[in-house]
Length: 121
Length: 82
Image (cartoon, rainbow over all chains, first blue to last red; front, side, top):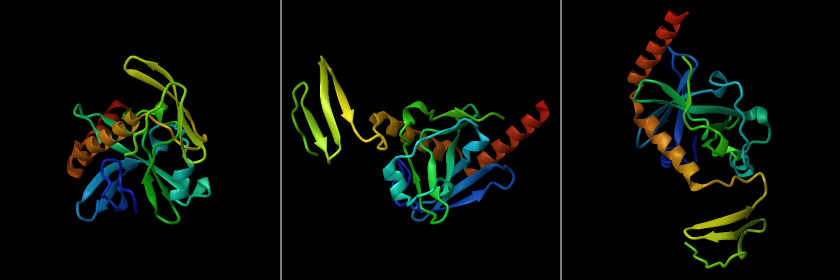
């Protein structure tokens, strides 16, 4: 459940995460409601080992996160015109595994994170 | 929107612990000093716009079918390279 939608898609609310059966580790973040919209997402650990972002207090509070182990993270994947895939590390989607609350956050160190990190084949 | 005039070295405060001070004025550029608790994100608006643009690009980039196909192709290419 995304109480605030995604940035630029503020009306999206209800979502489900479904693994892409023939292409792990990718998943579909499927929004349903007035408009159906899917985003391809991937857990950042499959893309880069060195990803670190700092979550602001407001985001922790909104998500009711008290322990890091309760948080899950996925990042949106974009298919570029040249056929390459890139991952948005600047605006990760953080969710509370216990409550299902989710939010696209702008981390404190967002300025140093790429919005179009290339996915290696 | 609240609109306030500030001179050089004057500041505004937001809540109890955020202040934004005009530290330099140079032709068409105003330099601002932001004091905020370090667990609060302070970003140029462009950071948000970049994420919005990327979300739109991701949403428009392809249908699930096209994306699945592309993922299959990439997997096959990777397998061929081994």
